[in-house]
Image (cartoon, rainbow, N blue to C red; front, side, top):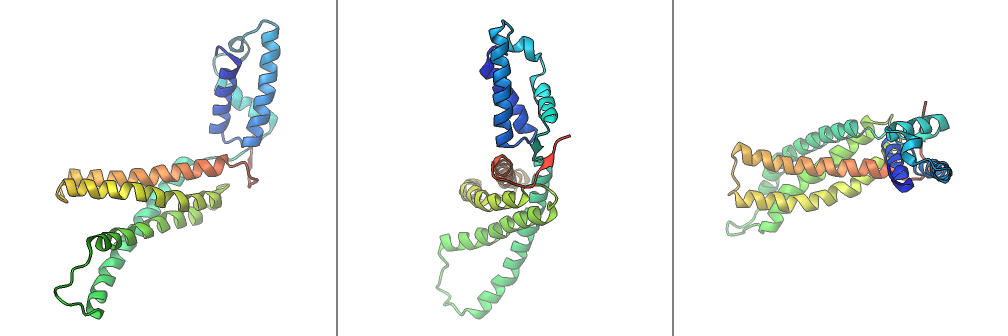
Length: 223
């Protein structure tokens, strides 16, 4: 820990991971910087004053200050979002299996008519994708009501998950096309991994965004 800036940055990262709110992190950082500057003026380096375990010290300082914390609970949020996404996807494909024959029966199209490829892709992928997002958001919002800022997390998921879908869907389709739409297990597993990665990434970013938001929210008091 060579400089004051390094020490404060390390402590701030520990406070952020500990769920300390933005305003409290700023106050703690200001106090720590003041103490470090006074110590340096007396010839004591940041490393000598703080020791080797700066993150541990930072957490103790937060506890002693009695600051409020918002637990991130990334693992719990991600697991719930994935479960909801799976349920939504299953519902989506079941709906497609029911709706498609009904539409074909009700709409009398000439045999020469061909559905535009982009429309077919949009319907085939779009409806399940929309229900995937809905399933993930509803699951997080309803199953994790006990978590602080879960409503804000669900709202941000509504923004980030479609964005992630817009990015990953063309990639997945392109990969499927490049492999001849193969159903080989390794190919299908990779396609699933792409989708799961997008869901996990969007969920983590949404939760991180919600937790780091300085706006007032129900909080868990440290200690």
